[in-house]
Image 1 (cartoon, one colour):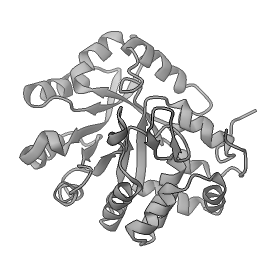
Image 2: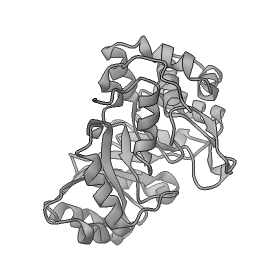
Image 3: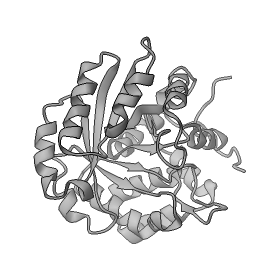
Length: 284
C-alpha cells in the first residue's frame, strides 16, 4: 500500500499523461464498455489527466458502430493493419464528425522499409501526432526516422502479457537516453500500471510511472544509461517523491515535452497511486 508522503506538484506534470488503452491487453474491455468508461473518464475529476482513446485500426468500424450519436471521442489510431485497410480506417475516421483523430501509431517492425513513405503519407493529417514504435533494442535505425518532417515522436513498449515482454531497467534507460539525446519526444505503451516499480503475483517486473518521470528528467540532464537505470529500479517512494516535490512548472513542462504519455488499459490505477503519494490532488 502506498503512503501519502508528498505535497501536490504542478498539475501540468500529469496533463494528458494517461492514454485510454482499455481495448488492449491485459484489460481487453469490450468495445461498448470501453467507450462508456471513456465517457465517464472525460467527466471525472481527473479528466485533464486522461489522453485520447486508443483503438486498433482493424476495429475502427466496430468503434464507430458502438459510439453513441451524441458522444464524441478524441482518437489515437493504432495501425495493426497496413495498405488498403489502413487507408480505409483513416478515411472512415475523417468521415465521422464524432471522431477527432489526434494521433496515429505504428510499429517500425510492421512497416519495415515502408516506414518513411508511410510517414510522408500521414503528413496529410496535420492535426495528428505521428508515433513510430521502435524496437526494444537496436533503436538507431528507427529513431533516425523520427523528427523533422518524419514521424513526430517515438513509441517504446514497456510490457505485455508475459514476463519476458517487459524490458529491463537498462533497456528502458537506454531508450530514454537515446531519445532525449536526440531531443525526440516519446510515449510508452503497456505495462505501466502503477506509480512505482513493483513485482506482481504473475511474476512481472513492472516499471513505475513515477520512476519514468524522474528518469526522464535525469536523462534530459545528460545522465548516462546506468544512472537512469538506477532511478528506474527504485522501489521506495520517498526519494522519488522528494525529487518531484522540488520541480517547478518549468521543470514539469520540460519533462512532459519529452515524455508525452503512456497507454494504460486501467486508466485509474496509476492515477490512484499518484493521489496516494500526495502528488496529484483529488478535489474534496
